Length: 310
Length: 310
Image (cartoon, rainbow over all chains, first blue to last red; front, side, top):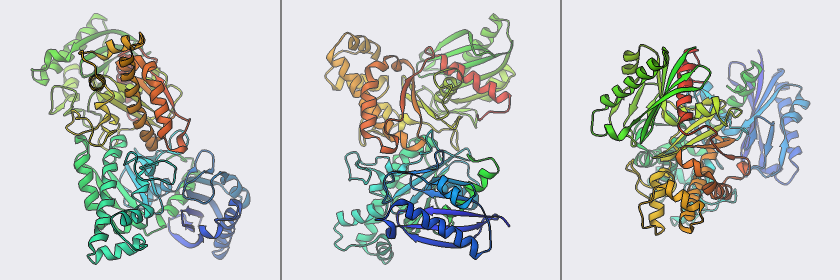
C-alpha cells in the first residue's frame, strides 16, 4: 500500500502522521515548537525530516509524498512566510529542502486550507461544495472552499479570517494591527476576555471550559462574549463567498456547545437578509489533529494525480 | 453569425444589447426602471422581452441565448429575489418566463458577477485569475473571481461586498441594517457624505465630480472620505480571497482619480502584512454599461458550451 506523510505545523505543536492511501493515520509523532523557539528554523525542519524517516522506517513503508499545513504556508512558492504564530519570522524555503531530503514530492499550504481539505475528504464537509473551515487554537485560521475547490488567492494566502477586523481600534493583535478577530476568538483572545470580565486567575480556555460546564457564571459569560464576536464577523464573512456552512475545528471547537448559541444568534441578528437562516455552524467530526494531517496528505496525494488545485 | 442578448438590470436603467459572438455590442436599447416602479414586475419583464425581439428583428438576427445580470439574480434558480435596489421585492421566476417567450436558453446572475465575467472576457482582467469587480452606482455590487472562476456560493448569492459592514452601528442602509459599505460608497452614500460635511445643495455625485475637479474643497473632501471608507473595507475584503486586483466599474468609477489615492492609502494602512503592497486598484477599461452586457452575453454563451460555472 502507498503511504503519504501529512504534517500539521501549529503554533504550539507540530504533528507528523504516516497516512495510508485509504486515509487512515497509521502512526504519528509530535514535536513541541517551544523546544526549537530559540534555535534556527533549519533545526526545526531537520527534526521534522528525521521524524518522517523514523515513522516510515518503523512501518517499513516508503513515502510517496509529503503534505504540510503550516501558518502562512504558500502552495505556490513552497515556503513558510513571516508567520505571527511561529517563533521564526523570515521566509523559509520548506518544500525544496524536504523534497531534497526525502526524495519525494512535497506540497505546503496554510494549515487551515489543509484542514479544509481534510474536512472535504474525510469529515463533515464531504457533501458540501461551499464552506469555510475555521481553526480555533493559538490563533484563528480559515480555509475557504468554493465550488468544491480551495480558494488560494493570487499569492496562495487567501482565507485569513483571523485577521479580518471585528472591532475597529480594538484589541492589539500579534500582527501589529488592532481589532482582528483572532485577538478575540482564539486561546489568547479567550484568556484576555476572561481577564477583562474580571477573572483573576491565569486560566487556560480548557479550564474555563470545565468551569463553564459546571455552571460558573463568569466562565460561561466568557464563551458567550467569544461567540458574539465570532457571530458578528461570520455575518460579514458570509457576504463574500456565501458558504453553506462554517465548520469549526481545533481545541476551542471542542466546547462549541458553549459558544455556538451566541455565535448563531449574533450572526443571524447581523446578517444580510439574503443569507438569513441559510448557514449552518458545524463542529468538525474528525479527532483533534487529524483533519490537518489527513488534509495535508490529501493535498500531496491529489497533486500526484495532477489536480493540485482541486 | 450567432448573436446573443446581454441584459444589465440596474437600479436606475436596464440596458439590453444584441451581442455578436465575437463580443461586440451591435445595437442596444434602454428601459427606465422608474417608468415601471408602480406596475407589476411582469410588465417590466414583458418590456424587456419586447425589446429583445425588436433588437433582433432590426438586425435580422436570431437569438441564440439571453444572459441577464440583475441585483440578486440567482444563477441556480433563474430568479430575481427581493432586491433592495429594485422597486419589486418578491422572488420572480425570470429565466423560465423569458425562455418561454424567446425560445432560447436564458441565464441570470448577479449584475456584478456579470460585470466580472465581462472584465475577464473583454476588459482589464483578461490576464487575472483572482480579482474582485466592484460596481459603483445606485448601490455597490461585487463579483468575485477565484482561480479564474466566478464565486457563486452555495445559493448563487456570493459577493455582496456592499452589505459587508464598514461602520458598526453606522448609517442606515436600504437593507434595514446599519453601517453597510453601500451606505457610504454609492451614489446615495456620496450624497449623504456631502450633506454630513456641510453641503447644502442637492448635488448628484456627477456634479460633485465636476466641482472637485475644479478644486472645490468640500467636493474633494467628499471623495476623499468615500475613498477612506472604501479602503478600510478593501483591507478587510483582501483577507478572504486574496485578490490580485480590485476592479472598479460603473458611474462613480469614472472619478477614480478623486478617490483611488485615499482608498489605496487607507487600504495599505489597514491591511494585514501578508497582503501589503500586493493589490492593485484598477478602473474598468470597458465603456459604461458594456461590461455587464458583454458579461451577461458571455454567461449564456459559455453555458452553451457546457462551462456554465467557469
